[in-house]
Every structure is written in C-alpha cells, then in structure tokens.
Image 1 (cartoon, rainbow, N blue to C red):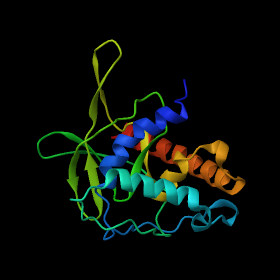
Image 2 (image 1 turned 90 degrees about the vertical axis):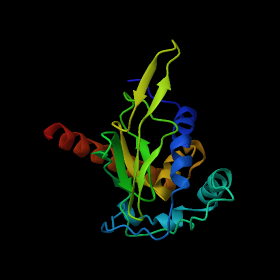
Image 3 (image 1 turned 60 degrees about the vertical axis):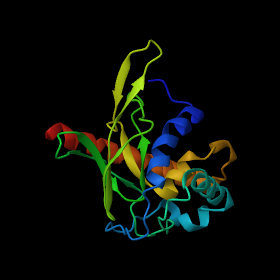
Image 4 (image 1 turned 180 degrees about the vertical axis):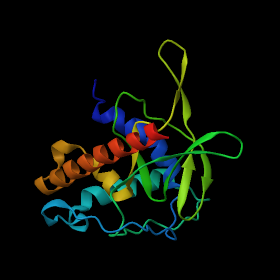
Length: 196
C-alpha cells in the first residue's frame, strides 16, 4: 500500500473540511461517553497555540460573511473517533452520516479521499455528505465516497493534520492514540458493513 504524503492528505481533506466548517453549530452536543486518553494526556493541554492557529486559519479561510453559524465549543465528553454511517436518502442517493463537529479521516489508503462534497442533510445533531466524482490523470472519472474513512472529532482532526516533525512528545503520543482508535473504529465499521 502506498502512503499518501502529508501534503496530499491535507489537500484532500481541505475540501471536506471547508464544507463541514460551514455547517458547525454550537447547539450540537455529543451523546457519547468520555473517552480515557492513555497516560492521562489532556487534549485541552495539548491544544496549544499551534492547533488554535490551525483552527483559526481554517475558519478565516472558510467562513464567509453570510455564515451566521456559532463557533465550535470543545466538548470533553465527545468521543475522538466515530464510524461513518452509510444511509440511503429519500431520492435514492447514498449519503455518509456522522455527528456534527466530526470530520472524515482516511484510514484505508486503498480508497481515495473525496474532495468537495455536497451536504445532503443537516441537523443540530448530524450531517449527511455525498460522495463526489474525481477526474483521473487519464481523463476517466472515479466516484469517491467515505468507505475508507472514519469521523474524527474536530480538535483531534486538527491534531492529525499537524506536521509531525514539529510536534512535541505529548502531541505525538496523542496523535498515535487517535490513529490507533481510528484504525480500530474503521475495523469495527468494516465488519459491521460486511454483515449487512
């Protein structure tokens, strides 16, 4: 399996992040139980200026004057990683559902990461995204969906987006923990989809 470069992952996830940032609402609260982080690392201590700068930069580049959405508020009881649910919309289109404040994170790099996607449905609790077409170098088109991805809670997603060469030990430990959780969630998600 060929690993995506850091830059390619950032570019692929930016389109999805842009669409999702516009949908954020502080009304949404996760119903998930608190997750214990190894060695009692506290995400609020890890989210230092580097991550906050990343979040502010993303919001400044994405949110427009017409967006009246409230800003994201960290919920310490939210799970770091959740499965992305496949749903069939009323019009027959396939959608990919995840809670608000979660961004897709590619785990299985055998799948392409969708770029710009449409929001098919949105509530205070969740959003449903479509897949998208990708034009291949040979001119053919491939449909991209979120089959190889899981949903990662916004501040953890920002950590996964950091350049690891510039991270301190605590950040690297948390990143490794989140990546392990993402792989485990993806394995469980894949097993559930096979049973259906």
